[in-house]
Image (cartoon, rainbow, N blue to C red):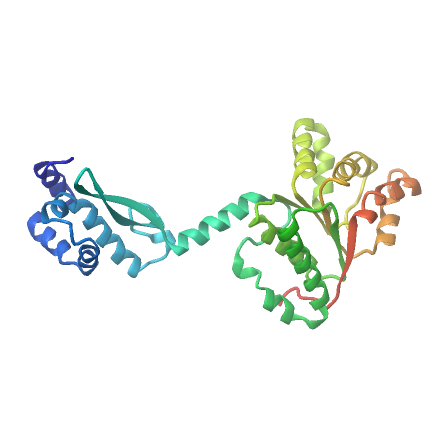
Length: 316
């Protein structure tokens, strides 16, 4: 156990040249310390004095938290944390133990960072803040969209309850009705449950994938990630300029792996029949109906179609 002399020398360093006796008296009379002493009346003056560093740190950080300047400007030794002290009797002597406790701002920040790490985005803008996804606002913003919002919420609740299924959702609707937003909501909510997700904005990804033909290792890593993630979203599918190679060897390989294993989700302005026609034609090979049908056989049976109706929300 630390001696009183050692504790005083250490305490002088903490006091920073100020009178340690005066600061120590002030700390012992601090309301927070008085409450602590009321909780542990067995504590002696000697025990408190040799633990002055810990008590001082607790009072300073408590005041910092009361006047919180925000997480980014947190003045405490450990950002987003404050010192808490517990007391235990060991071998007939009372010991004080300090620990760092996270504040609510740090907890919220940490949760957002965990969600961010769970979701990989290829060219798609997905929010990770809880403030962005408020169920009542989503339901009330556009009554015409209520049915679609409800279906997505039900899908999330079912996954939270029974686990990951193999069937995804096909969010179909006009421009700006919130299809990507609903897909982001689904990824966000299920990321909080520990599920990994990838969202791919198809028009830009397809162009990038063509360039990756010359980088086979990077292409392999990208395709593997899309194959194995828990939740995969192809955003704005049908708007891309497909090449036969991307259709058959990239998109086809991913969907072939995922079917009957993990759910895949889509947002599109096309219905399923229109999407099949889109897949059946490329500028290089012309019309290949069997290729389009082959790809749709890996989509159609593995989704529930959700019509996302409502007004164009962009710019609002």
